[in-house]
Length: 277
Image (cartoon, rainbow, N blue to C red; front, side, top):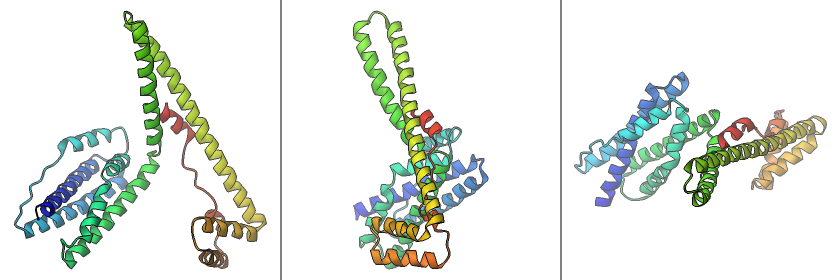
C-alpha cells in the first residue's frame, strides 16, 4: 500500500508541475496558435493531477503541491531564444517513462474499472500531446539538436585534448596555450560544420532525385509504379495480400499515388552545418 501511495503522489506531482510549466510557457508565448495549444494542454495536465489527487483522497491522503520553480524559470528563460515546442519536447524526452509507468499501473489491480477507464484516457492524451509537440518542434528545427550535441561533444574532446597537451609543454605560457586552443577550436568548428553541410546536402539531393524519378515513373508507367508501391509496402512488413488490396483500392479511387512514393525532405544543410559548428 505504501508503494502504491508513493506512486500516486509521484504521478500527481509530475502532472501538477507540468500544468504550471505549460501555463508559464503559454503566458509568455507570442505565437497565438502555440499559445492556445500550450494553454489547452496545461488544462489537460491539471485534470490529470486532479485524478491522482482524487485517488489519494480515497485513502485519506491529502497531497500538497511541490512545484519545481527552478525548472519553470529556466524553461521560461530559454523560451526567449528557442521555441517552447522544442523546450517541451526536450523535457518530455527526459520524462517519457511516465507513460510506461502509467501503463504498468493500469495493468495492476490497484484501480477499479471506472478509474482504469479514466487512466486509459489519460495515457492517450499524454501520448497525443507528446506527438503534437514533436511535430511542432520539427517546424522550429528540433532535428538540429542532434547536430548541436554532436558538434559540442567533438569540440569539447578536441579542445580539451589540445589544451592538455600544450599545457604540459608550455606550462609557463598560458597565453600561448589559450591562443592555440582557440585556433584548434575554430578549425574544428569549420571542419565539423562543412562536413555536416556536405553530408546533409548529399542526403537531400539523393532524396530529391528519388522523388523526381518516382514522379516520372508514375507519369510514364503507372502500372510499374503501382508494383513499386506494392513492393515498398511488402518491404515494410505488410502482408502481400493486404499490400495488393491496398494498391488496388488506391488505383481504383483515382488517387494521386505519386505522393506515396515521395519522401518529404525536411533537413536544411545550412542549419545543420551551423548547429554542428
